Image 1 (cartoon, rainbow, N blue to C red):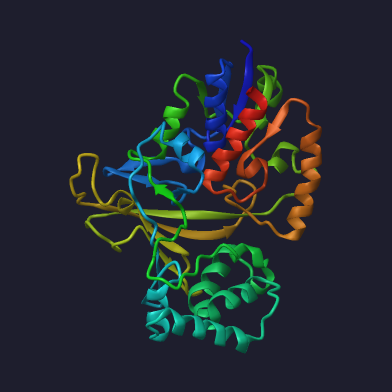
Image 2 (cartoon, rainbow, N blue to C red):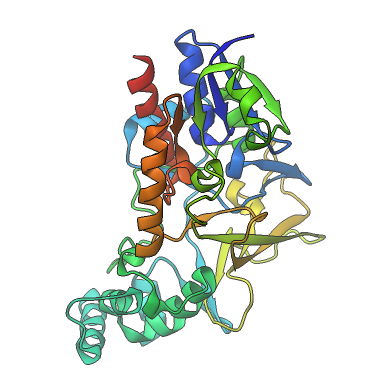
Length: 372
């Protein structure tokens, strides 16, 4: 049997491309080495709750064409991401807004908050931020940096803030209003019924084989299709011959609790250095603590997230987009560009920290180039 496209990976990039190709009458085979579809947006129902198995995924976008696209496959609820920061038991509102500044400094007006940040920035003597620490202080001052950014970021990246590039934190929302919606996005929500259902709808009518390791069976799988869309790690594809690209990984500890409410919020970030986990997710609040029929759920499921350095065998989550890895990726990209029938895409294939909407947009653009 001959396919037009073999799609390696059933995450968002692979699923979107596969759907677009099928719509154009192409014969597509999707494979995934996991036993489930949906990649890192995979959700699994536990105690009536759609649990985000590979970490919290909150859909948000300003791209109307992406929103119009995803809402063809799922109805979205109106979930708004408003995390809470816990620093040694002191609770602060995220993103940084007037509630945060009032709690931190007792300021009441935006003018007072801006003056406080400016004074701390001046005191630190930062004009051109050279690293994440200096960038953060120039955005929110030293108090907020020390309590709400430093410990969390160093746990997340496993490196001192002074060794991390400034751009990582440039998109940090800072607001002199009482708006605690984390994302500046016109469209936001969670698919009703979970992401797995949404991806299943994208892949409806397309042949999918699970538990298939592409790199272990590359020659025979390549022979099945005219072209391959590969969404796995680019360095693994080339058998790490230029060296390993670095990632951060995340470990999850899930717990079902016999109580209806553990923390009262979907996400609580633990911003001190001493607490070993970075955050606790309470999954039921992504869907307002209700089941599909709208009834209150008597139990809850929480996930503690621990950030760790990636090693082969771990799940790669965040590319470490520093200068060293950027140079190595550029070399791998040259090899990728020389492949005649393989297209590399997605977070791992392009070694890029992608939000979900950007992954979908990228897959739609690829489909447009390839199929139209």
